[in-house]
Image 1 (cartoon, chains in turn green, blue):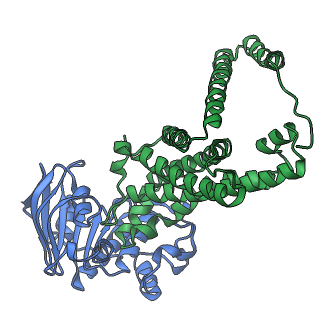
Image 2 (cartoon, rainbow over the protein chains, first blue to last red):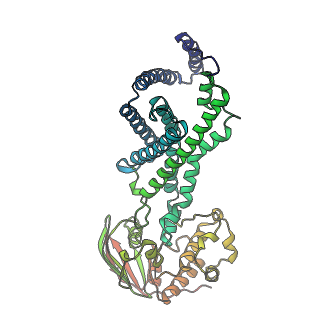
Image 3 (cartoon, one colour):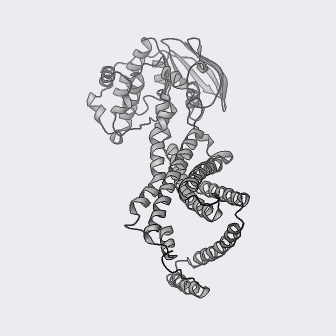
Length: 266
Length: 209
């Protein structure tokens, strides 16, 4: 630590909420009808973050591999549900959830474990104070890539059905017929992290780095952490989006090189 | 050459169908009866049951792409996957493509056209060329001349007849009774999931002017 950490009290939070009240007031005046949504969202933020703060406090005190693992599994399960819920076209029989959760589990577990055991090296390596925030940041961003990639490949295959089937009818393999759309979906899934890396430092100051600076960490140290996190997120998003897009594309086909849009929920 | 036994797909079948080398068979029936579904099932584009063989070789003994290269389905609405026309003819001999284009009243410059600018008739003729250029043993055409004027429809019929004369079997869907009688050596009606033989009154062949 090189600076002073300024503790916030409840009055500080109440002061910040003045801007929220202002936004609500504007909504009422301009008849936007957003005041209720704003209020509920703000309330959810307070309740959810307070609860997670308490949970993290307990978890950090115990440093138990079991509880840390359970918390990680819960986070992954919720992320899978979120990625699946964001799909406008879902696969039948819970396949959207299974694919999203498996992609998130694999990508999140590989990248987080590697980062903990090689780059950050806390003692023990599963120390929840490092493992859970790291997994959270990785999952949150990977979730974005996975859900965008899944949504794109499903929507494109449905829209381009005639083109794909024209190729299949001419004797092209399913892999050849869907390759351009798989590529397009992966590009869409990775666009967010590519943009975030390109804009980092110039247009935006990433949240984690800002948080560390506010907590008194030397900016050059905070930058190192941020670069590490961004690389981890990029790696995890690539693995997750690739797995999810390929799995959805495979599920929308079969071993006789057909396009199986009947496997989508109507 | 093509033998279909106990084919079942949704409300179609179980039905049998045979197509000999050089034979042209017309498939007629009201819309929604499953004519396209039947052809898609034979091409193995949808899950289906039944025993389908080509010259005694079963469909399952080869990969689906290998099967479809020989038993080719040309849908009524053609699909395009590249911006220009030319990439859609990958794998076909250019000389053969150009010859077929000319026989359908198109110049070889058509290969450089933008797909987005093609008319319905141009799409239909180009998709017929795309299939013919690959010389499939069985050609299944779904309303191959529905979007064409009389002159181009006649040109397409001449090409279809020539393809059959070279030893291939052709199965085509039409709503034009005269075309069915003119082009089809046999006419089959798909009704309630079953194929019925339709009596044919021979019609004179028209040749392009």
